[in-house]
Image (cartoon, rainbow, N blue to C red; front, side):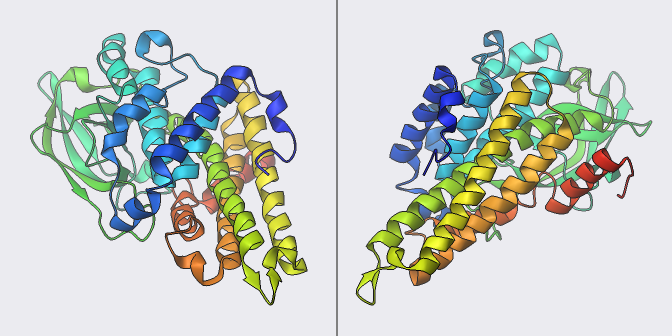
Length: 384
């Protein structure tokens, strides 16, 4: 069922190897414990060095900056396998790679790239990405966090919310408006006076992910903290495009995990003297799940091809993120139903994935926001 349409034959050997390497790691190190970690609300920080050694942090970056120069497809397949383990694990890697590292690579100075990226690739420095605010989620241009000039440096004030890795991070890539109202990016070491992070403990989703509020109270930054090439809202949004690409693949992994467990469960669950897999209603439901999974795989793989050809456009990423996150959520819900009472237990995967995917469906652009992005692209009218 993992490759019902024979898509593996279109993948390069190194891409298949990257996927299988991460899959083995997840099967051995993550899936046996994911339910417990999720229920306890803890992130397995002991895995961070191993994830760095696997090469899941910034794999598409050039080797001189700690990356492997891997293809976008390989990166996507790595994210797929991490999310088979848990969305929180993939989210950790997505923020490290697609947001924090990419922002530094795309908009940072050469000195910033060489100072941070190799250590981030090894997992020695963890980054977070401060864009969303308490009153500015789907409308990031309405952010209130701001910087002012003071001498040869800057002073940062404001707050961010729903920040993955916030309490784990050594550096935060923070977006703020300068005195002219232009959005700029800054690298903020989290031990800087005036910086504080507060972990959010009230989540009923993404419980294996560290999610935080960030506060900046007269945080003084040297001019070298500025990402010099960042200018305008397009800078953080381009980072989101990279991360959304990983989400489109990651959602496939969560859906595959739910489909696999539901299929295995229905073949062994006996009701009225036979496996429930022998009933028409269950077979229809499994086929519906498979159909959604194949549609998701096709979108993700074509998006990977566009990425590698340098032809990927952000509305295409929006369609894949929108459809795959919602499709995976539907698959997880159907799997939960097929498992009956057992479906609500973290001893099985569907309820955990379903709860996580409620967040995946919402963050980095809601279903509705991506709908409007795509509508604007094909109709030429802005409905925001």
